Image 1 (tube, rainbow, N blue to C red):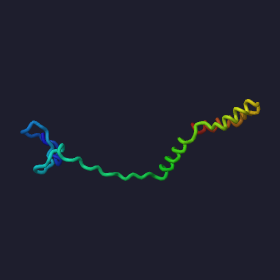
Image 2 (cartoon, rainbow, N blue to C red; image 1 turned 180 degrees about the vertical axis):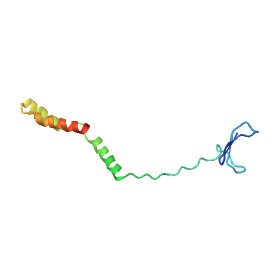
Image 3 (tube, one colour; image 1 turned 90 degrees about the horizontal axis):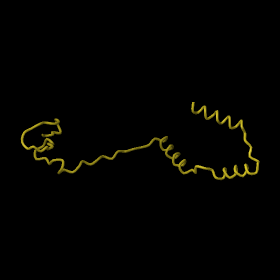
Image 4 (cartoon, one colour; image 1 turned 60 degrees about the vertical axis):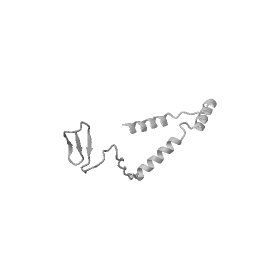
Length: 101
């Protein structure tokens, strides 16, 4: 079988091995010729994408827990001075519900 880069696949007699015909006389097969060089693609990110990337990096660098705040709340609970503001909690729950729905 002969594969002609200009016209597609053609069957022919002769050698039972497959070969690639580049359409020129005396051309080497692909196995003997070097691979074509890949062109470098220019990639540019939008300003929004760059900002999102910076934001993601800063979020990943931030600690998961504010240890100082936890210590203050723990101390307030132990001292009996920690106050629960039910109205504030309810309002924040409603705000979260609005974001989801």
